[in-house]
Length: 169
Length: 283
Image 1 (cartoon, rainbow over the protein chains, first blue to last red):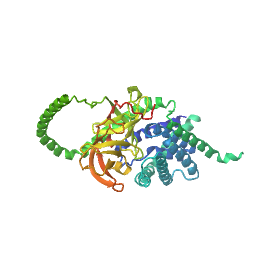
Image 2: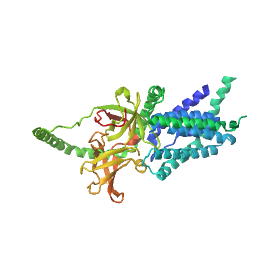
Image 3: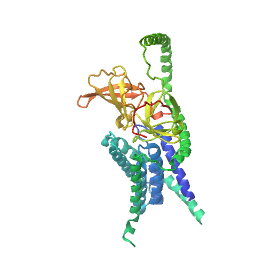
Image 4: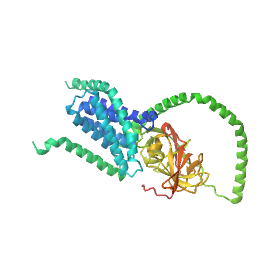
């Protein structure tokens, strides 16, 4: 229980940083998605259920505060958490290249879902342009960040999860 | 082992997705999740507000560092303008008196040019270019209602789209989903201001459906018009920086540089006098 609380607090920190500090740093509207990176890492290291649950929690927060209708981000982060955990089951999890690959495909998936939702809400938006100008740069940025930070995330996760064994045994 | 055991995980995630999709439907009908008001208003809002202030201060610091070179020349320019300012002030006063006298003669009824406004702080902003939405720290507790206009000293910023107990959600005018009925102040032509992904990245917006006969030029000021009924009339939006012909030359499109710096929003004002008699499709 305690280790999940720590992860939850870190997730909240990601949410706060993403919505308060990152907007000031955005260049050409591109800024990294810390929640997506964090959920991907949690899901790869701890399995699909934790990935999905933390994905839903972060998604609900994003939906409440910063989405035009409720449900877009919950849907995206929940499915990302689940499928990353499921697919990464049989691979070497501490490999930053795997994390890079998963994050880039995640981000592209997120972009596609948002573009579909925008089209369904009849936004006047160029599909190809949003994909090229927003989705791809964001995916690359997320990939670079997780590639550089993944080793530390693995160590952090090990530290948090070690406490589980101590409290149980 | 029953047949579905193999697909158990996928069945669960399918159910979760279904619940989320159903909540999307529920949200469209205007329902809220119980308990979230308390968590978002009492826990997230203060923390987010503090962090946003810190971010804003840091950003201000680097912004002023970046612009330190231009400060001297700007200072000189302002000093040279100071002389002409006094004359302008006298002239304005004279014209004001004259205007008042003539209006009195005509028994002219002044329209509401003073708005009832309330100050607010931005507590967070969506990052990335997907949606341009920010949250402010006033809500139902300060009588904010959906559809109220949000302005800064730079001009019109957005409109309130969702009101919660202690905070509200604001849609920027440069979001793709936002349309503002605008008027070119000099020529009086009406148009519609639309957000656009390409423009948004450069901090610009475009006003479309300006008539072909319009004499709109670079440098003209753009204000809100009285059409549409969402925004009060006469709020400053920005300046025209380029005029293009488009839509098979049926309309003109003006590229507008808004007076507001949407990346560095901090203190905003919510205009509480919304027009009466207009149904926004709510409540």
